[in-house]
Image (tube, rainbow, N blue to C red; front, side):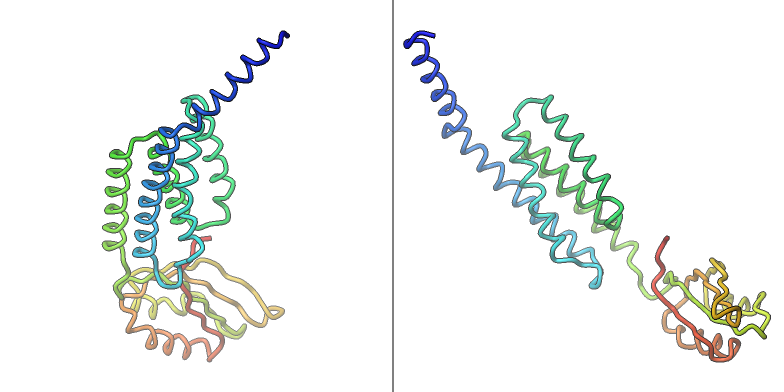
Amino acid sequence: MTESNFSRQVVEFFEGLLQINGIENVLRAAMTVLVASVFGVLIYFTYKLTCKPFDYQREFGLVLIVVPIVVSILLTVIGTNIARAFSLAGALSIIRYRSTLVKPKEIVFIFFGMGTGFITGCFLYLPALVFVLITCVVIIVYTAFTLERGKNVAKTLTIAVPENINYDGLFDEILEKFTSSYALNSIRIISGGAVTELQYHIKIKDVSMTKELLDEVRVLNQNFKIQLTQFATQ
């Protein structure tokens, strides 16, 4: 390689760096990060607004703000459509791996943030804004219409029954009185067979009747253990 060819290649290399890091590309990247940040904040406030007090996680809120920013800047740097497609596939694979560790609602918000980041990273700012606003409205409206308002609240009722009591159909009359629906989910023998534990999934007609329900159950199971908890799918 001659000295002139080497010098020309060095010059071309630095010219390429200047082109990549030119003011236009830097401004475009900065605009993408700024727009993604605004969208991330909107997603965060939607998450916070639609969460129950004990379900809200501040750390997850930070994730919802950062995810659109990171995804958008990566898409901006990658540039080509083929590389973007591979990036999308990889990101979705990561979410699938993490899906066993988070709640379904959190997975939805992660997808929401990533989708926003991908659209923003392709410089489609207006479509991204429409996507974010419509999705936020849908989530808020759905939450408002499905919010528990004191009636038909799903719970898990666990009742311990001593071995000398026949539990078959014992609590049916009470459950029909206080619940809109109920189902016997499991029967478990504990304490060496001395106690039988019944687990029901129930929907209480009115939460103000909860104490009365527990009092009547307590009479039938001779003051053995009774536990009423928030319903959770297995």
